[in-house]
Image (tube, rainbow over the protein chains, first blue to last red):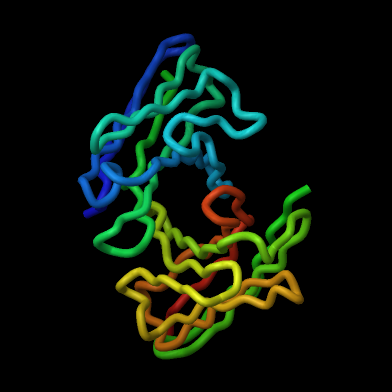
Length: 110
Length: 113
């Protein structure tokens, strides 16, 4: 059972907009920034969104992040087949004195 | 180009020990927190430990406290993870991460008899 709750799966057709939620608590998301990671099949995770809503250099602007209260959200617009991957949220947790990840969301492009 | 290269993963028997290494290049190692994250086969990501720039502060996930030790050598641009009393639950790909942004390719640790 992960400290951060993500839906296990999401799907959309090419061109659609999909969102992935990440629910936490006051000891983690409510106090700290949220990062999002993309893990393509068979590869290492890659930072997609940092500090709630900032895209690292090279990340397409189709990807965006937001945070409200104790929840974060990742949105992908103009869905493409190459976006099919696992997506993870992460943040620091004060109660655990460590980083915590969501359980991951497997995105399928239909 | 920022690079992190892990090594040391292997097949080890339950109760055994292993030391992972991560050599970095392309950035000033001594100015970053460094992190180990692991991923069991077919499972999600689990943060394992991190260490402050000068090594003075270390944090661990509860399941490895007392068994794993994170360390660094800033003169060698290297991060380490000493793993003792290994069990099957420690079987995973171990990733070295700069702070929480740039990831290495991972090294596989398999604990099995």
